[in-house]
Length: 171
Length: 371
Image (spheres, helix red, strand yellow):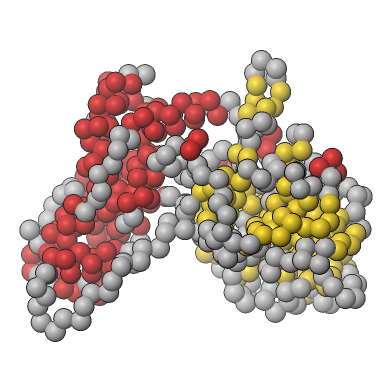
């Protein structure tokens, strides 16, 4: 096995992968555990991946799928504070959005959460998302629809903006 | 950029910097290569019951849960004090030494996974007596953990929520622990039942941990649970089912017409249990039994299970109408379903895949392999 190549890859991409893991899991410690276990698998396949494949795409796909099928009991996400009851507009709107979104993400199914992260943070198309999740494009559309519908209930402030509808129909 | 996208980006940016994960991954990879030599089948005991075979405790979550960022070797020991309720315990199996062609159990150990996801080594919990594994047990709510401590020569019950532990005043020699020994723990952690050798005539031991007393129980019975002050015992083939109070008058067993196996714990009403009649096991029929009158209340044909595989056991009641059933789908792993005992409708709870490994789940008789 080409240990040096693997080390270089991990050093270069671990922080980006860690961000994805954090968005999926919601807890940095669990995210690190998840990523670590995926990297062990990647290490086992490294020579083939380095020679013929795209290691980062493979790792990202493995990360998402292991997250979805992870049987470990994840810690319930307990946001440190409820959003303040603002009547109009918060001074720090972005901070508030993050708190609201954390709470909302914790209430989605794993697949819905994965779809949102891949579509709206990783900027993958529906076809790329389907490839990463190993499912059909129709399933991605359906999961996206349900995830956004749930978000509209849980975090209406985040999905009331017209541009989100544009995102939902983006290919 | 939309507010959703901005919020996602904001959360992503809050991700703490990680140290080099490559070394930990390489360590885990090397360890995984070594453990491929494990003879997993050595831990898939077969319990012959009424002419049928129950595949024993081969449950392992899909993810290598013991692998943390710190690596397998650096898992912490269970600390003193409160750690929170247990989700399960699993046994790190022995390794097969190709040169000596023998199992090496020197590095085998029990590990505890709390409901919050923390994994601890249990160095005080004796894992093996020779080549026979020594079980641990967890109370239904995960609060209490029972294990055998070789140094103390007795079982220990630890309150994982508040911290204290009690060493049983009843000494049990390690040499008494034989193949297929079982351990069952009551909801309040006060009573445990230890069967030194499942399926043998050797008597079991009902232990009052707090009171330091014990009482032998005929070896023809095997324990299923201790719930609501009742030790649930089954004498197979006949089939006698006995809800025996842990204190006071012992009551009498109830006989069922037919050879039933895979008994569940009593339902919340204390009057029903589910089991599988051996004759209809291949047809995937679950029987709801009246535990007081010895009658069959209902037979449920479980539709919607995978084509390949067979029933593997029953478990805890989730409500007054739903009970857990385990199905072994062969290469598809073991699946846990909630079965509605009124309609037979199934609801998939969990899938377990991966190598065979002994797991102790809350409220389940540990060591019997019937999940």
